[in-house]
Length: 436
Image (cartoon, rainbow, N blue to C red):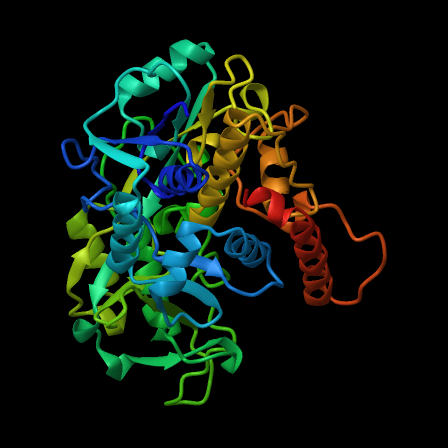
């Protein structure tokens, strides 16, 4: 059987390599770490979670919860690793960051049909290739891709990660554990701010000095991962209606909702590290410490990682790729992950899974599995390859790209649950074929 070269050992690349190998296809997995690292990467492990440790909502009343359940039923390596390393996060699926990567790395390296080769790839190899090098694709490989697909077809935006702080440095006299509206377990630390404290924090944040990034401007910031300082500049109350929303989080000391609340989410299994939810930032490191110390609970916070911002590169996929993430002009080349324009850990995983399933079946002389638009996996691939999309931007999975039910269901949650039920029924009809 012909060997497939998979470039990039992030979530999409590892998922693709594993699914190919599980179907009897030998894989050569090329990964430039640890020989070459990017500013956003800190670990030598595969499937490193660069930004948040949350895979977002777990319930079937939201689209990403549906996508996760589909992937579970299809034997996804990433979902198996996520479930094995889960940490408390209320209604979300969050993982122990290092444990998750270690689990994936071990499973990939142990597979008898996967050969791992370290070192930067600067040209597109001959033969069947799956490129999953992510938003930080190295300049030589990005140039090689650009030459292959034609100039002017690669787009950029900027992505940001939130700081991590140690639990022991959080002043719990000014914070409390709670879940919003008392739903689920009290997994989040909530840092209350009075109106005066919030206004001082907001003013300092708006005036804080950012690190230099060539080409950065607000209009290029992806809305789903916007730096907190950019959000703050959009208006005094923008944060209070966004990541600092206090609704449903009464302070047990007063019995009343604070003026604003900064939430912290557990980042590892032991609970020694916490993530500032919604605080993706590109402020200079000293500025982060200065401004965030205006949050009373974080006055003496120990920063284990400051927020960072990096370039995110993606393709004009509706013009370039088909529903299986193959390059239309040269089908031996397949793409997966964020460079296709899917946004998010789970979406990247789904693209790697679908691309690998199609590629393995094609190499074995089998017809493709056409996941319908009613499924989240199918809807994502069909959106990315939809030539009618004129202004293509990276997007998370959502129910808006899944066909409506065709009958009325009262209540948004009930409607979304019904959409998920229909999707999983459609998936079951294809599941046996997809696992072959």
